Image (cartoon, rainbow over all chains, first blue to last red; front, side, top):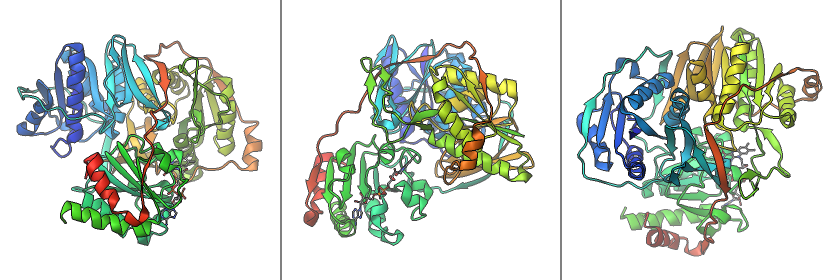
Length: 321
Length: 249
Ligand SMILES: Cc1cc2nc3c(=O)[nH]c(=O)nc-3n(C[C@H](O)[C@H](O)[C@H](O)COP(=O)(O)OP(=O)(O)OC[C@H]3O[C@@H](n4cnc5c(N)ncnc54)[C@H](O)[C@@H]3O)c2cc1C
């Protein structure tokens, strides 16, 4: 018995989310009195694999196979299931990102294992196994019992602190039969090197109150100075003022940065659904009765175009830029 | 070629949810039920594909697992333009249960493309579509932001971290769709509403499946502390405040 974590890699590298998963898994393993094994699929160098040991994985299993070079949900499910069976995993932990959402439900069927998705805390208890998850798009939370012998959890990004440990992990290459995938990637368009909105710890976001696509300069600058990413409300991306990648909310990206600065955003339920996991919300809005102030811890009532340049200047001073 | 769009019946997205029975059940009093936003967009895209004769798609069916009270939502889907509907007559107990019911429907009726929303706005599981695919042992493509069908050959665009991938697949397959799949949901016109009345809703009785999970208790999020305001004239002070209190800057 052990806790198995699937740690995705991005061009052979792990990210903070990978280490969050391992840190979380280590705590779950403690509750169950067992250890953590991490599974990596694809070509990752040994020194990179070893990093997973620094957060509590005692065994690192690496599967390299030509049929697993590109992501196919059915194939990856098969690989994770075989490894889980091999090591007798009782709890499987996966990120609640695109990959996790594509794989975890398939794995749930394959292993007949109950799935708790979008979990943001440690299990409330391990017997019965009860998890705490987001529901109703963030307007509620629920305690859910996972009733099967094997359990799967997908962990919401940025919801668990990194915990470093002594690194005693062993690396093992695992040979697994993988069929040729039934899906084929025929084209990829990808920006590399850009901070992803879902990975950013600080996000500066603009709404219709920004008035025009031409006014975005100081907002983008503020994000840059703070080392953050930019986002926007749905009407802003619908109007084509900003790229769809930035659309945040119930029907766009769901993010949980440490700091979310909402500028000229009214705070509609559907928008808040995408950002309510943020640790701190700051609102800048010229209407003091805007609902965004009900969820914000810090606010300024005033004109965004006057306020943003002042914030940029102050941030530059603080950051020594 | 036949498309199936799986639809979920959810509280209107502006609903302030409340719970009853010692916070174990959703209080449905006063709730307006709507088609889950992503499912409405899936249906819109499915109809656009069918409208284009070169796609080879001949029919669009919607399927819902739920009690008779969900029929207005199903009728709405028919009014928007679905050719027919299927309802599995059961109280949906969890995603696994729902997927198992839909799997049975697909086995009986044989669809080529099955579309599901990336999540339902109530229980936020993001599960049904992928579970269904695994039960049927067919491919699934997740985070789909565009679907084209040319001469019965589907071409799918999916979102990946920092970009997009164009993917081809064998059929049948499940497309789990998200933002981008259609611009605006199609609205039912008067003619559609009239026609929907005579369109068939085929009834299936549920297959016996045990749910794998059970919801024990709901709670509302903790109230956030009251907002601290900084004067617009001294906007700069906000940065100092964030620096000293949140330690994030
Ligand atoms: C099914 C469904 C799903 C949806 N999903 C999403 C979603 O995912 N994400 C999303 O964002 N929305 C979503 N919406 C839309 C949502 O309901 C709101 O319409 C939207 O969030 C409003 O965007 P906004 O705050 O930018 O604009 P508005 O609501 O127009 O707010 C603009 C704000 O800017 C303020 N303002 C104006 N001028 C200034 C100024 N000079 N300086 C400072 N402030 C100023 C105003 O006081 C106002 O509060 C969805 C709606 C539906 C029905």
